[in-house]
Image 1 (cartoon, rainbow, N blue to C red):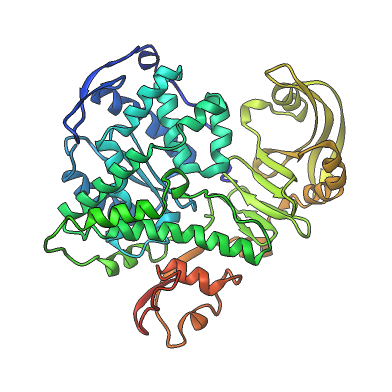
Image 2: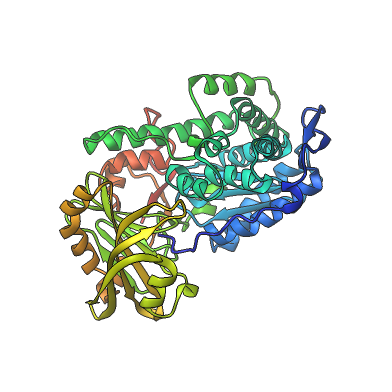
Length: 498
């Protein structure tokens, strides 16, 4: 749980009622297209949405890394088809493997994806691709399509961008706030033509900045390796291969796409500089890996959030999922769990007020409890949703450290599953506690560290690696040699995690 409140999408009334729009010349193609967004609209709406994105995801608090990424982005943007825009490049404090853009020149890249890139040229490839979406007005094109479908322009544009940045689980929750499922699916990704165009523009912008355009191929291969590793992990755990939930989930890639960009990149010839690998490794050295202190960290079955001063432990066989909206302690089958959320301050100052204002029960009963010294209230009752349907809920409110209230909700796919898992849910609930000294020591975030590759290879480098399962595969993935590529030379700089 990033423990940030989910932010509503604010629609621009002027654009929602803009009708069919006006004719606009596309800066990349030079062709005239009908659009509900002028360039001024793109800038204005992008600026509004930018503030919401920063509040939701958080800016990674490293001014040197931010400056480095901004420098790379500004150089690429200056050689793009829309150099006139005021471009903004932001590293988001997220472990997700993502990058996305908003209309008007707002480009985002997560520290999560940066951990797996291996050079400045690859970073430029990711950023160049996202710049391509902006220069070709793909967001405005999508917003125009959604205006015809009856959705507000900003809702369509921001939803599409955040779906690209949130992965599968985040997409479902956000989509339900602003549209019907079918419409959400329609804008969950760019069209194949738009993706191809963004790939090509990324390669072109690399070449214009004396990066080898073949690095666009490397970027796609790096991200495809993420999918292969996810499949390897699932196999090792005896589970089905997972669906894609990284950058490629919204940037569909396949063998044809790789072949297309390889062919396109060969069109460029010239004297290219080096890939600035050493400069990149220096920039990411010390960067947070995985969960950050501000987001709380997962260590095995434990969750620690140092700023909030709380900890939780999942029952044996359960796992902790740390998402933007909540912590979920989920069972092995994935069909039941305890959802832990931070209650907004305006929901009420007492548990009775919170139940009345936020839960809005039709009927029910409450029971006073104590969780490791914290006052708690357990509620079982009936609630009615916005569609008028009623259902049973089981929640516990806890008055935790710092005068913050937490909602712990029992959840399962059906009543029978809930009944079977209720004892373990109660165990998970009972683990809610203030951080101990041992908890604080375990809550230290991991960091990317640059080291020299040892003579013992990845087997030696894996010693002391904090993620022991498939450690050598993880290290290969981290260093861009997953899937059969040659190992680095002894003494060469590589990345690890400490």
